[in-house]
Length: 635
Image (cartoon, rainbow, N blue to C red):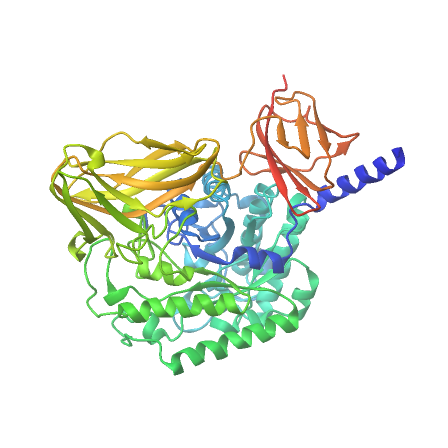
């Protein structure tokens, strides 16, 4: 028996090193439908092109159903030391290059900011791509490879001192990135470079890919098997990935290929002066997508490498500027065509087994999906990308009203109150999408005389969860008030719990939130809005119900009858007892940093860990898993 126990412990220990190592194919499947957060950290100064990051970016993206975020980042300009502009661009001058890697240091403050943003993303359960997106000073890297047309002024000869300096700077930056994030979970991916193919040849790109892959792998820890996203040189759009050399693909088992797609440009860029094809969606249009994506799929299968559609999109409807609320001077895609373009490409990618991250760069861009200023969405495009008609959470159905004001919603009116509900007119809608209005013509002098009800949800797994309920709302006049109320059936009895009074503005929609812990032994729940206290029109949209216990953490000692971990808090050892066969164990801190641990004689030594909160994730052979919140209190 003792020998069997030793063998089991050895097997558990061996699996720890492999835990979290997700194959490229599995990662592509996990990534699914994603979005870019463009023009923020890729701007010369964060906030210049789009509002600076806050954690709400990631909360909102997760809440609607996106699984992956690609974060374009620029490390050049003043963000990294070492000016290379003084070196010669001429041939055969590389020997005059006198610099070294230590000349090129990323500012600590910038790396700290990137780390904060990445933590926000990972902590919200999003697969996160760190994309080395561009160079603020165009002469610093990509443009130095091309002698074509408008880029010729930046060109440096391959044997020049300037080329040597630029190459070393790029690699020095990647060395620092790899070292900074080497302990992070596998849900952080690295993308070598964004759209190099306009300037860099396929041969040069193979060399660059090889060098950066080597830098990442040699940084150790989890970077040994982290998935890396690469593309090829020379050709753009769907042909880019196809230029990656076979030697690169065969050299590493954890690579994902990527390509971008903005064809036909006459449509996708039609808000500009030159391009003016405003409609899309004919059989010919879709056949072109089928053919081009089909080439990528065939290549992917033949090379055994999964694919990310890293960017695609079309200009805003009629060239609309969401930061100024103005229509463009030169027109732009019509609403139906823009939505169908996004829907078709997204679904085609998913059908072919690709993951995708659609291009979005906020309110000020010409390709807007998420509107940072009011935490809103271009709803039709968002739903097209997600493959849905309207948002349905575990608790609230038709939460964005896009399936109609009376789908999953009903209005209860008790005398003497008089009220009706309907779809709000466009002038009173939120984000030019469907919104719901409750028109109160006779008040009931009490909030509960008029109740807007969502569908009753029968679900006995909600017990004990802390849910953040929210709604965007405004009034026809200032100072109208409403409440959020939750009705539960708990132990067979109706329980009603209400928020405090929320006061509305008549100028714009505001976000209102109510956090509520669902009682134990709850079997059913109904989300309600109470608005019977005063005469006026109440406007509502974009309801949500977010589980605050995302990790499903159990605070007590017993995680399940099959598994126990104790004592908790712990200051030296954690004891493990399980009647189920343990397949994997992972310890993670609150910043998603993962630690390799060993189980020896049913104990985990935690004496060397810093004080704080950790999460012990255990996976069993029956494909179930549990997460236990662990407090370590070493002195």
